[in-house]
Length: 424
Ligand code: BJ8
View 1: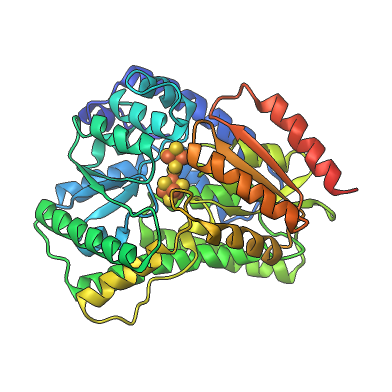
View 2: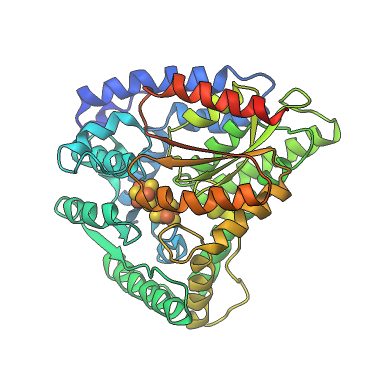
């Protein structure tokens, strides 16, 4: 990575502790990613983004701030980026996916909080992530109890706006979410000094839809018998989608897809024939959490789909681009976002239907239902998910894990045995 120490210093970061993170990340990335064979050439862009993860994009954000733009940090795919970009501001995902930040979160949160929340709070309070320092305002949501309380703690350190997400999907809940989007709009307008009008919203709806279209196009390639790209690479792309510039991200992902088109014509696969096709369902895998994909893909499996927020829940379903008035556009946003099937809803049967549909679409041999430790929502819903899959005759393995490496060997054994069983 180039030298960004001055920039990090100006952000008030703890350079000494941050150096430790800078030392370990490239090693992990080389082990997991650069060791793969026959990767598409266009993965070079994403490799570069990771190699400069705390440098290039943060520098761009700071430059944008110097030019008067505001940066909003988000933690959940329910927050409509369209409103933020529509106010000529920038949204960037902030979910923490590294064990490195967890102890910092544990200084203020109960140990039995999910690692995603602990890492996110630790990254801010320990001052070891530039993105968390750069964001002018955080946008939280009321999806789970752990997050709700974490926002109160983070809100003492940084301006925070919390969106109240309904927990059911009745008509009145769609209406309530549309009102919440309107409230977000008012907050963003006041903070940025810029108006969101039907014209700016129309173009930001297209901007974010284009990103979804690129990710959906990429995902289509994974349905092929010959799989031209690994699940690990697709996970990385999906993680980068949360904070990269959306226009550039869509361009680079479409360029990769053009290369994959050719690979499909040439029958290129990155996996040997007969590799078992795995769908991973459950809690999100924030960057740099690559543990599960790495275990699956070094144990005779190929991850062909993620039914998660770093997967299909992020890019499936577009916002209707045909609406002309602001009210209609906000209703279209509410409609699309309320279609996300997160375990925070009750009931959440549509998620079960999604998983079974995806298993068919991606010709899946087996499902791994993953739960981040202490996520009560997905853990409880796992009972219904796993029962439905068994009823549908689809083999399923339920696992619970965190960000540490302490369970890697045990997971290898269980996942290896599961994949082997799929061949019988
Ligand atoms: S839409 S999955 S991004 S809430 S894993 S913090 S739920 S205790 S991340 Fe999520 Fe939005 Fe839903 Fe997706 Fe809480 Fe569970 Fe932790 Fe979670």
